[in-house]
Length: 108
Image 1 (spheres, rainbow, N blue to C red):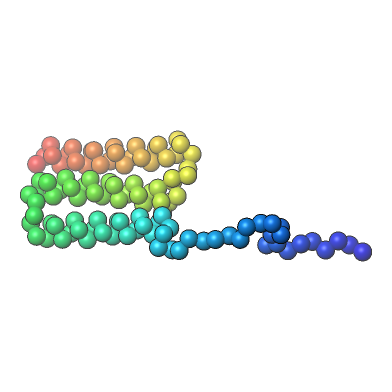
Image 2 (image 1 turned 90 degrees about the horizontal axis):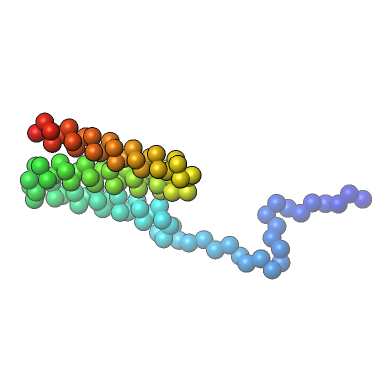
């Protein structure tokens, strides 16, 4: 008689049960909440004219660069990417942000 294979999800008797963290404690959830908070706080500060336009532009672009980095690392899963790929994307953020701010300050 042929041997019947075990189901794919069968675990050995001594295996520990898999426990999942609550969604609120997942890294992507925490990052998402931080991104939303940064957006709301910066929008509120700029709507109240709390900073000068020059500082506001600088802050917006730097905050955007930080937010892009978090999106790339956590939502595009580049945190676990090979070092060369991750380095290329992180370098891209710095170069593009620097170019935009450099041109803006040079013409302003």
